[in-house]
Length: 304
Image (cartoon, rainbow, N blue to C red; front, side):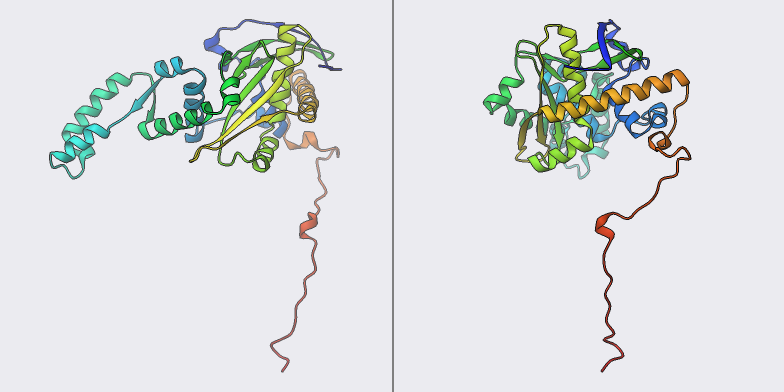
């Protein structure tokens, strides 16, 4: 990598259990929010994870860390108890005392585990089977390290910046980083748009550069996305980040690191106005080209 901003990287070990709580280390998701505005970054992401996020986490765990999935997830399957109660004459099996007693015993087994339904689990299992039937996809997802943590300090021309990252899957022998994405449409056209909208180029460039600095062997890294649809036939595509994709991502993450450092030093975290060249913050509002159109009308009512 070539950078006018970054001069070096020093790994810093932090407690893995505190990774997400270390707000003094900025991550790709933090840079994404700073790109909206520094105020959005400081506000943070509130609320509970969405159903799609929870599904994505279970999907990642089952494919990349099956042993961890067994430890952290509980597949809630009430199919057998419901069938039994229906056979005994229950019209609404989940409303019966027997079901509630069974459910209570299951909850004791669940403990602190994350719960997914049997229907969700079957989808994830089928999605993995589809991926593993493709020889190159299977090769990308084998013989590597999942959830690979990178934490350290960047030495830059504007001062030190603590940074953290956690690539989905790292294949050190080949210098490959693999990122799994679930989506509604994995076609090249739609995922290209989704990748741009979600700033995946920033993620790819940052992770590749951090791995290059961490290994210190002077060899560049390749970044692959495996994007898979969540509905049958669970089609997927494999995308390799191009030099253009990485180059734009590197430019953007470096600019966002500059902005982050400026806000840190001034103690000010402005909103959208930070991106406005006009000091007043006023932006000239123009119509987009698609809205510039003629309006023709005809008097067909009064003319005979």
